[in-house]
Amino acid sequence: MRTLLARLRTARAAQAMAMPRARPPSLTRGPTIGVDENGSPLTLPAVEWFVCFVPGLRHQWWHRFAHDRHKHVFAMRPLDDGSWLLVEPWWTRMMVRVLTLDQALQFLRWGASGDILRSRESVPGCGSQLRGWANCSVLVAFLLGRRYWTWTPHGLYRRLRDEAGTRPLDLAEFLGTYYRTLAVRSAAMALEGSARREGEALQDGLVRLGSGIMSALMSPPALALYRIAVSTPGCPPEAERAFWQFGPGRFLQAVQQMLEDARVRGEINIVDAAAAAHCFVSMLRGGAHLEAVFGLGRALLPSQVHARVRSAVAVLLGGACCRQITPGASLRAAVVSMHARSG
Amino acid sequence: MRAPTQPNDLEPPGGKRGTLLDNLATAMGAAAGADLQAVLDLAGVSPRQVNEIFGGSGGLMIALGERFAGSLLAPLRNCNTESAFREVLLEFGRQFSDAYADAKLSTVYRLAIAERIRDEDLGRAFYRAGPGKVVAGLEEFFRAAQVAGIVVPGDSQGLASHFLALLRGGWKVTGVARDTRVPGQEQLEQHDEIAHVVDIFCSGLHVESNNAHAAC
Image (cartoon, rainbow over all chains, first blue to last red; front, side):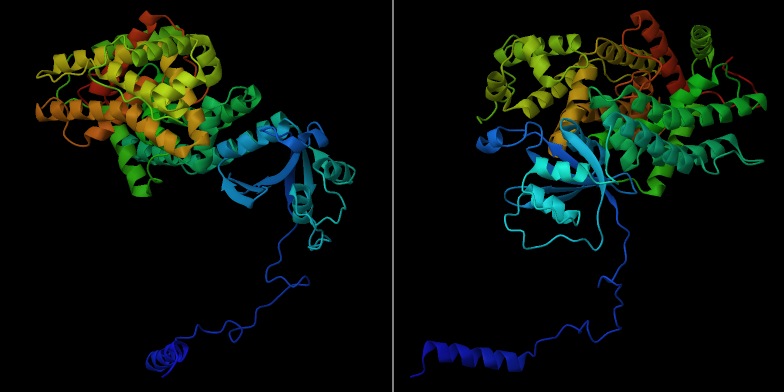
């Protein structure tokens, strides 16, 4: 009698003959993969990390043995699209995540409660995998390609701080510049080519301008900035001002200018173009913006943006009612009163 | 953590849950800019009570969102004429304006957005219980007005979105950050602006044509 093992072997052999296993195409037999002097298939420049040395968020027994404000260390850096990369060693895992700006700000504020150093990674680096105890300090030193023999966050802090190229970060100052950069970039994209063309109908011009503005308002960095501005106590006022002045403020100016020009051409007859621009930008933000702020829905397709903007333009210029009672009478009074107040 | 007490139609208006929400809403009006802990301290509500009754701070935010949504939707009723329609919009707008003006609602929104940064699921739940219900209620109102031939047919959800956006536009918490018009203005002035918003919404800016029934 055959043993159970022998029967299983026979069955597997028969199965393998009946259904030959498809082999994946060998990558090594394809075109040769070029490598740089470090043996990497891609040559990427060294980047700067924000290395955050922080106090603990929850008390742990070993905190009494560590530096007052440097009990833990993690690293993060901004990405080109306004999101952030976080690398945080835990006791139990390595957390690597792409965060939105508002999420990243939670970590940056934690970092600012200790110290943040801006330090450039070393490529190819001179760290070693044989450092033994892989705590947060060792892993962050390894991320930066450093060979420092230190096992505490404060020890790493002192070593990095003494390096020539390392700079401490003033978070408020950094955020002011960063928000401004994001807002300027967003406004430039939204308003590029938005001027009304010769012979173009006002509503078509508003739809084109509005589509750019709505896309910018709905972009992840703009939503994150908005959440921060609204919800974060202690958000630096200069950062908010920069965001306002170089972002939404410019949108309002552009719409106001288009309406003002239309008024001069005799296409519309309004007293307060600024108030009308405010109404239009408010409608562009609309429910979709609020949904996105609370994390509902997917990013709008360009066709959906276009449809919503057309609808907003229709309401702005023509109203929502089929028949209009006392056309313009109370609007006239209200616009005049707003105009008087703003004056 | 214990399961939260569910809102109950049989619960008297002055029930424990309702009283707690009243106290917290009052504290939110007085604690603009504060965090949730400061609001709880001001209202004399302990985190344990919040856990017992609402299941945690998330449940509390959702309950507050529901409560405000219910009060905002109260003026909406079906109407058959354009003047009645306009009157309902004015009433709704005033209710909306008053809710924002005393900072309670804006504080709820602000705290909910702050919670959303920490917990995305909570943000979605808050939206559905609060702002989402207001949008849905207004959408239904516009749909009925379309059936009655008062409002141009089409996207009633878009119309609800536009009208709420026009109303929100003047306040910083849900408007573009650091707006020029902020809570604390005289109520009368805000009501003037509601009339302006309703006018814009109903009649538009009036594109000038040969028959110039212009706005000015």
